[in-house]
Length: 251
Image 1 (cartoon, rainbow, N blue to C red):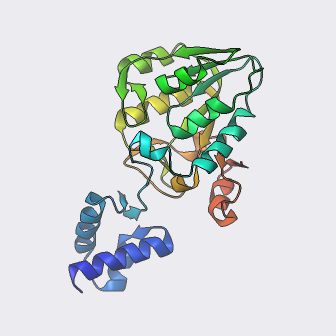
Image 2 (image 1 turned 90 degrees about the horizontal axis):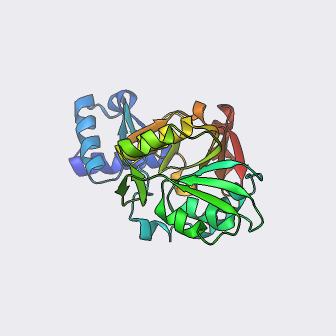
């Protein structure tokens, strides 16, 4: 089998099964595991999959620029934003992540809501600047332009002074086995630190982020209370998350 044929077959298996497991596949194809791993490395370098221990998972498409991501599933993100905003109770302290879906949460907060939003996203802070009754606390640091959020040691240190009721987390990948992931190491560390400062973490997961993975792990799903997805996401997709004890809220 030619290299190009092997790669096409690997991508077909990934699309069919949602994962590639090197051991069984090497036996099925009569190829060495090293050959398959080399093909996976090259496909990962092209952004066509995400390598994980023992194989590969679909790569998250949510790694485009901030401006381009705003156009991906805009209607679904708006619905997720409204569902998330409805979870906020008067008087609560809420941590709101950066990103295009989190921006929809900020836009959906009702004007009569009295609450405090802590954010490391200048975009979120500006969006809430005209909200009549939401207090905004901004965490500073180095600007990670992909998601327009502050990262770095200073941001993590500032988070240690916060005790929040909810953390609305944005991710680029959610997977039953691989957990929550994103495309930048510092961003992953900041998200993990924020999650530890909240009583409950709610993940904002538009459909392109489900059952895919990115290079940097944020946390396992055991550290998540709720995932908000679009209303029409197939039950076969969400059942594995519910089996892990995660509440799936359809927007």
